[in-house]
Length: 71
Image (cartoon, rainbow, N blue to C red):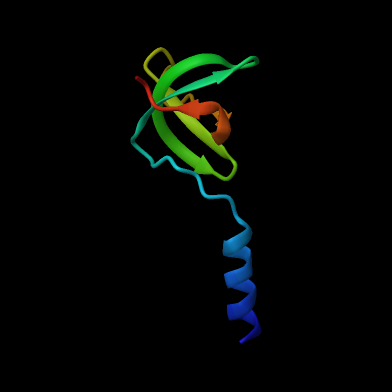
C-alpha cells in the first residue's frame, strides 16, 4: 500500500510535457539558438530535438517551456 501511494504522489509531482516523440517543434534559447526539429527524446524537464542540420545522432536539448509549435 505504501508503494502504491508513493508512486501516485511521485506521478502527481512530475511535470507534464505537452509534446510527444515525433512532433515538429521550434526551440528558442539564448544559448542553443533557434532550431526547428523533431522531438527525439523526452527526459523531464528537458526535450531533445533532432534537427535537419545536425548529423545523425546529434540532439539539442531544450527546457520544454522554451518550445513551441511552428505557425
